[in-house]
Length: 280
DNA sequence: CATGGGTCCTGAGTGC
DNA sequence: TGCACTCAGGACCCAT
Image (tube, rainbow, N blue to C red):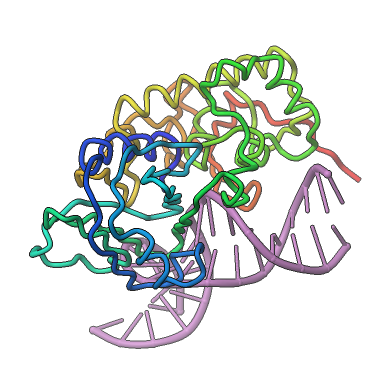
């Protein structure tokens, strides 16, 4: 499940692999992946002849700059890119193929078919999820105070607020659980009950876990690989995600798994103090 | 407006 | 052994 560290790792690999290459032809095998334009023939036609100038990231979105267009790609759960020669066999679930003039192909595969692509000419046409994105976690304008104020406006569980991409961009289920563990905050605590001090610690924890995950090349839980087909290494550093039943690395209490905001949620019942129960 | 639940999808895992 | 069922979850849609 690619989150910010995985998308950033993919971005870096694609920067090496595809920048400067010119698209000759595009083959869309699964039209549902392409959201914009509506017509996949048009999607393919517009892209032919374009040269990839850069690959950027915003939140969990990849932005391929290929003037005059920008291709906005979201990997969702299991989207993957790889660079292959056109003569190599296609892996199952390959849905979009960008053939370059040199005979190589950038291939997009996605078992769950949740990923999306939008081809636009200006920011005015960006998909809603991208325009409504909150600040990047490493943006220096995201001060502890601003972060606290953002959280303070919300009554939902802190886990739900961190998963909401309009609060802060790029976090998903893995790194939210990890950051809350590091900050010793229970995932069900209401966001507006977070103190200034806790918000400050939480922001530090978010930046810390994301930094270390990027350094490790992301977490490979199930299917994630970067543009070179390489797995990440951060999964062995996870404290709580997927660790239910295992002893907490800090206090040895068994990690518990509950459901918060509709997501599997892992936490240490001793390190992350449960909020007061609201009872009718 | 904020919140929470349902939905999309396929493969892995579980239970009988 | 085989089958039915549940679960995994990011973003979007919709009802409350």
